[in-house]
Image (cartoon, rainbow, N blue to C red; front, side, top):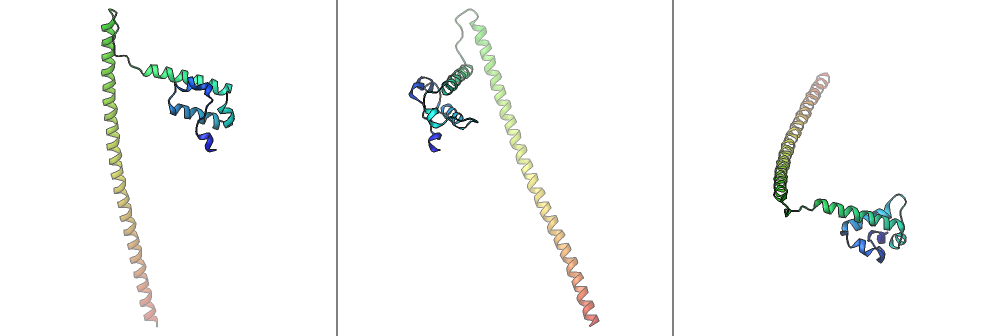
Length: 157
């Protein structure tokens, strides 16, 4: 079982594997060996159409994702380059505003969490005091009843 934890793809797939980060390689290996109808370690380590299809799909997805995340900060050399640069500056400003808004929200949530934690601790203490008082009161009632019973027993004797 420990063999299945470490990816050992066939050397045929090195070009595809070199394009992917280690985490995605590990996820692909885990997916191949632990899915509903898993491949054996030997099948996953050899040339197999399922492995090749999954690797090709993941490489394509990774490259698309990487392209979407890449932000080009150079303006076009065409006359419309200023427009592109202006849009880029506006986009960066909106991103920084959103970042600030998100950090403000996180701070607010953190403050609320602390506030509710304090309220909860206070409520716990109040409940403990109430329970302690009730136990003392019941104990006093019991003791007074016992002392009354003892007195009546002494009087009767």
